[in-house]
Length: 101
Image (cartoon, rainbow, N blue to C red; front, side, top):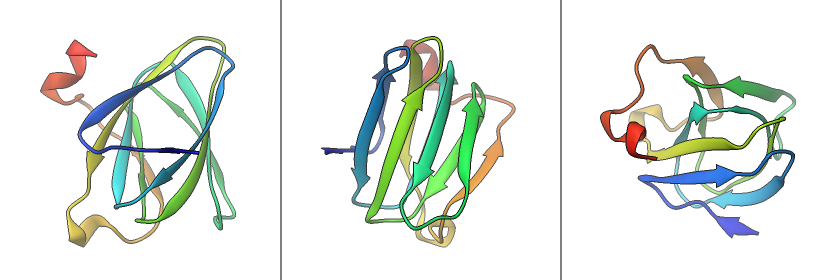
């Protein structure tokens, strides 16, 4: 199992599955592509596309699968006030450094 490092990016090839751990609360922002995400202990799974995100709690075990094309995720550590459980949503603008991924 791979550990997600904060403030970085992760590329997953088309159809590939990755099992990762999140040592701190993090936000997974989808920069490009489409992914399926499940978080151990959560009853919901998530389909996320570019511009959407999923916040995960510290010490989470996460399984991520890219859909039909390679996907790029931007990973950012969450502030403590945002770190309670998984939450999905959309952002209108990607982080400024996401274009470099």
